Amino acid sequence: MSPFQGYRGDGVLAGVRSRKRVFATAAAEPVTAAPKRQKRRDEPSLDALPDECLFEVLRRVQGARARCASACVSRRWLALLAGIRASEAVLAPVAPAVPDLNHEYLSEDDEADLMDLDGDARERTLEGMEATDARLTAAAVAGRLASVSVRGSHPARGVTDAGVSALARGCPELRSLALWDVPQVTDAGLAEIAAECHSLERLDITGCPMITDKGLVAVAQGCPELKSLTIEACSGVANEGLEAIGRCCAKLQAVSIKNCAHVNDQGVSGLVCSATASVAKVRLQGLNITDASLAVIGYYGKAIKDLTLARLPAVGERGFWVMANALGLQKLRCMTVVSCPGLTDLALASVAKFSPSLKLVNLKKCSKISDGCLKEFAESSKVLENLQIEQCSKVTLMGILAFLLNCSPKFKALSLSKCIGIKDICSAPAQLPVCKSLRSLTIKDCPGFTDASLAVVGMICPRLENVNLSGLGAVTDNGFLPLMKSSESGLVNVDLNGCENLTDAAVSALVKAHGASLAHLSLEGCSKVTDASLFAISESCSQLAELDLSNCMVSDYGVAVLAAAKLLKLRILSLSGCMKVTQKSVPFLGSMSSSLEGLNLQFNFIGNHNITSLEKQLWRCDILA
Picture 1 (cartoon, helix red, strand yellow):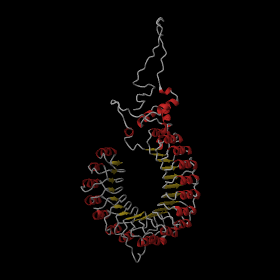
Picture 2 (cartoon, rainbow, N blue to C red; picture 1 turned 45 degrees about the vertical axis):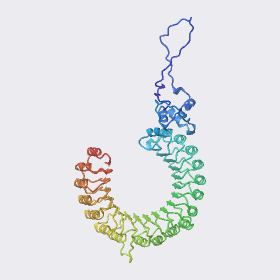
Picture 3 (cartoon, rainbow, N blue to C red; picture 1 turned 135 degrees about the vertical axis):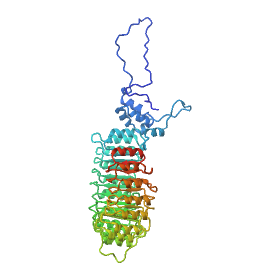
Picture 4 (cartoon, rainbow, N blue to C red; picture 1 turned 90 degrees about the vertical axis):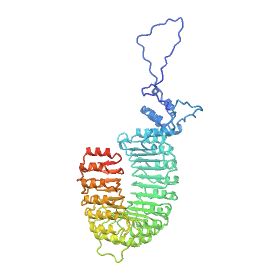
């Protein structure tokens, strides 16, 4: 129990009777009457104590509940509690052999549960206007925090070194710290974290211009358990801090350095060379590094499994070629390259040839990648499972067909997004590949891709389970029906977002053929889909969990049909932008299955008062209106 249990905040301890002082007087001395007006004696108050004495009192407060209650007394008490390190707190004495049965004891775990009944008491997130020193200090006073995220900062009373220092002193067991867009935190605050939180495993610093190499060096020396480091848009960080992290943090596993203008080859090379045995995930973006850094990664990155290289304009073809031929990336499984002009056909083929464990490749905005390397790339990638290509204008459908003809039998997923070269071909190749291993196909926002190409896809991919054709406005029923009919396996996830020329005939055929396996269906923006499709869905789909009908021409009748379906057990339903859905649908929506978890009713004519009624009926459902 808190020693300040009875403190009322006005300087009086409740329940303590004031005792009058008794002065001894001589027997012979006459007793005189007291004056009419006697000056009132000051009441006792803990606030009269100097800080040193009050500090000694407060450091004996036991339990998170009592510390939080004490911190609420005044800002002075909060500041003093924030200055108490965990090592300076006086532990409670051992309980007596015969406890007081009239006294209620609470364990530390019970107190922590009482302090936070809504969530994990060991995690705190402060965002925007709530991110102040006072709130961070109050969270730190309770102690026991393992993860803290500060996202943004109050414009006038934002988080500073004082709040971070209080966090360090109050939570020495802190394991994860994220500081996003906190411009007033400097090296001093980071040094306090390093001095107190020796168990820190994850550090994320984004948009903190006052943090420099000095703060990172302190973290390197004080946090030997560090496993994950993220530094983004920190203009004060250069090479010395990264080199120190590499030397001192032997357990480092993941590194992400983005948009730091003063980081160059020296810092990246020093980090990778020192942490060669542990670092498994590396992300480098927007840095002034050259071919030298990639050569070091290729030689010393023996433990790297996940590599992301984005917006590296100074890295050329030679850098990628040397990285591959250094033979150090034997464990590389996932590689993502974004906006790197140095990645050419030769470089990509080399990476595939000398990275035997490569399973996923993601290429985005790589303008020099063309059809020329896809065949060799497919032949060299013996265990490749997933290929994602986005905004690579030189890649065409002929190159993709050549890739599928020579790909690994383990290849499962292909994604083509915003590739203007993916369009109908004048004549089909003499030999069409048959890729029976492919399970997932995404062809998204490729304006030249029409019915003719889609029919070819159906012939070469007979065992698709997941199909995403978002943004293919030129595709009609004539192209989609052959793809759907050629699927030997049951389709599970189908996304037809923006396929505005598809009609009820295509949807009805889809659900009749694959209703037993279909779990997710998106028809957003399919303006020719009407209530007829909902009637087919209600009769044929027994496993459908998510249905998106946004901006379709469905009406109240279609909603009534869905509500009456006995087979359907929808978890998520979207009717956003369905202008024919009105308040007449409210009774039907209210009677839908108790399995409904999410309902989107934005931009229609149901009305706010009807939404309130629905919220009472579907109290388990999250309604967006």
